[in-house]
Length: 285
Image 1 (tube, rainbow, N blue to C red):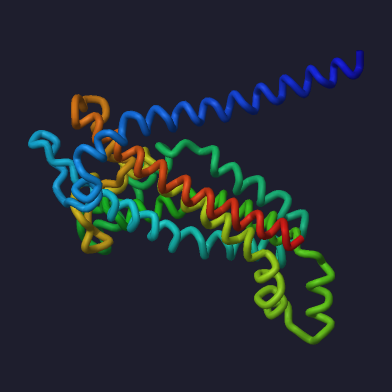
Image 2 (cartoon, one colour; image 1 turned 90 degrees about the horizontal axis):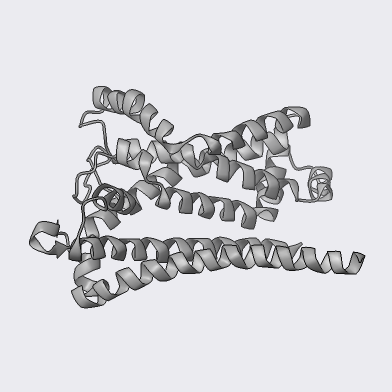
């Protein structure tokens, strides 16, 4: 009876795992089946590298939104990655363990805050500050980058701390015994030993930034143009889909699904890079 029970549990867990994988595959197949025919019919070059997004006239170039997405994501990483890694190093190397055990879960709770709340704070607090002190409309690439940078902090900090804590204490003790200072030990030993995990945390944060929608819609301004300044209003790929899918029909709707294909491929690439980085860290252990 015990053996039968274990097999039943094993089958139930296997069914659950395959259900999740099947749902993911169905979503991917649906997006690809809706978007790829449009890309091939319209032309990959015209779709990806044209500057004209005028659905009413049958023009569906998404290059301005690709550029906006890349710049907003880059800005988010400039804000979030150094700050996240610095916080992780402080909590894991300098802060007392009881303090770290309290602060780390608190930071992770930031991931549970709805993105619309971050967007609301950006509209009510950040955008007026940018408009007053730097100029421009306030709702801009800079505002979107700062908000996204804050939103990815829980991912970067949490995974970086876990990676740093896996470095054997003997590495630190050996470095200190050779006369290195605490900072030299952190820089030359701890960071290098946990590099793969830190890089993976940054890449996963990058994936979160690329896929974010609501906060970007509220803060970035949503103008379809290639940004020439951090103060320019921009529209990202995700924002474009969310703003126009409710009324899109025909080729316009297919173009939005094709935009989803571009996002899907980009996020798969980022997650694959993160998986490889984590796998290298596990192999080194």
